[in-house]
Amino acid sequence: MTKIISIIFVFLICTGTNARAQEFTAQQKASECAKIKEAMQHAWTGYKTYAAGFDALKPISKQGHNWYGTSFCMTPVDAFDSFILMGMTEEANEAKAMIFSDLSFDRDESVQLFEVSIRLLGGLLSAYDLDGDKRFLNLAEDLGKRLLPAFRSKTGMPWRYVNLKTGAVRDSLSNPAEIGTYILEFGRLTQLTGDSAYYRTAKRAMMQVFNRRSPIDLVGTIIDVNTGKWQNTESQIGARIDSYYEYLYKGWIMFGDPDLLDAWRISSKAIKTQLLVNTKNGIFLTRVGMFLGKETRPYYGALDAFYAGVLALSGDLYTASKIQQANFYMWTKFGMEPEVFNFRTDTIVWPSYPLRPENIESCFYLYRLTREDKYLEMGKRMIGDILSKCRTEAGFAAVKNVSTMELEDDMESFFLAETLKYAYLLFAPETTLSLRSFVFNTEAHPLKIKP
Ligand code: DMJ
Image (cartoon, rainbow, N blue to C red; front, top):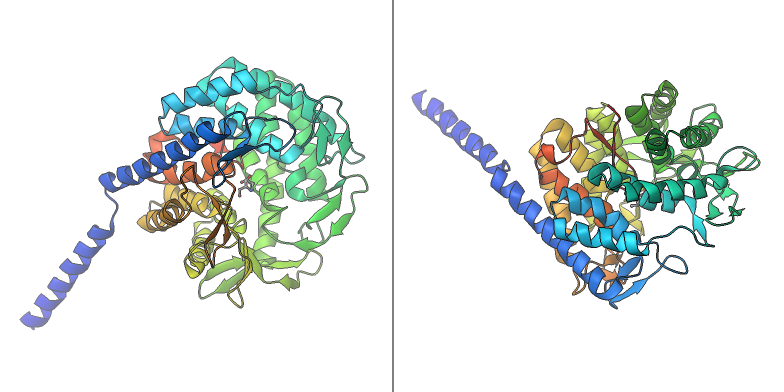
């Protein structure tokens, strides 16, 4: 008997010791933060050396490239608030100097409303919220005014492209994400300028999508902003829909508008009923027809991974944790997550990994909300893989194929805005940025919640 008791005692001591050994100490967290900061420095040095004056760095050929004719300072604007949060004052000042000397929106250029809004408008507003320099707000307001003509369609849903000088628009075939991802940036602009047109316009656009949901409360993938007719009725949670759902919930947190909460509740209930698939590897979200909810393709991917974070934020920690289990499975199964894979056959559909943040972003939210060390472990593994496998002499490169680990000559500005920021914040003290005071836009730019 005594022997049995002592065996149990030793077992408990050992498991207790193991459990403690697996816990992250403050020192380990600080060491992760240091690694991520060093990566941020490396990416920025590469950009400054080879791509200053351009939107982004090509990290293999060591050149700069622009999205349009000339630069819109995509990398400096996207990176600025990450520098502030990581305490990288020198780099923040360098980015700020580039922005104020080079960035102007007074250009005869047709730009993609969605990307310019989430990266530049969001980046400038966040820069203002964190740094207080009025010139950031002036640039943001100038940009906001030039983007508004995009919403002049028959339905109020925006065209995909707008000319910053003439207001000319083009491309009426759009999607929920490119129609409904403006309320955080435009709403913050309304709060800061007092001009209600921004909030009103952004809300009308997203509600037009919501009002066109199917009888089972799902939205499709492509819609014509003039006729209001769906052109592709596949419903899913990833590319071309993702941030529409994200902004319904985050819009509610930021502005307390009950219409947004209602729309979120109805939509997230439909997502749970129609898209969730429980497997031994966690919960995936599948693709279905928006009218009957019948599965079209059992595909899941890197972009879909964001949903666990938003769901956690909205309070459903159980489902969020099961989706994050699936997210991490997707990462470890292939050594790094593919853009899209078939979760029923475990085969890759689209093998690239363009340094996306969503999987780590969801770890960040889940860790903040549960304090469970398993999310630190997941984040450590993922950021560790990225930093070791994607590093080049000049920066970090996207992966063309996660099976062969062939790299691609591309370092998206969202790598500095989002991937490194969420990884850093996962390990940094909560006081670095409180979720009670800020809401992240879909490009990870924190916007201040008006008290
Ligand atoms: C970013 O530009 C944003 O997070 C957007 O919502 C989705 N795609 C990229 C990152 O993957």
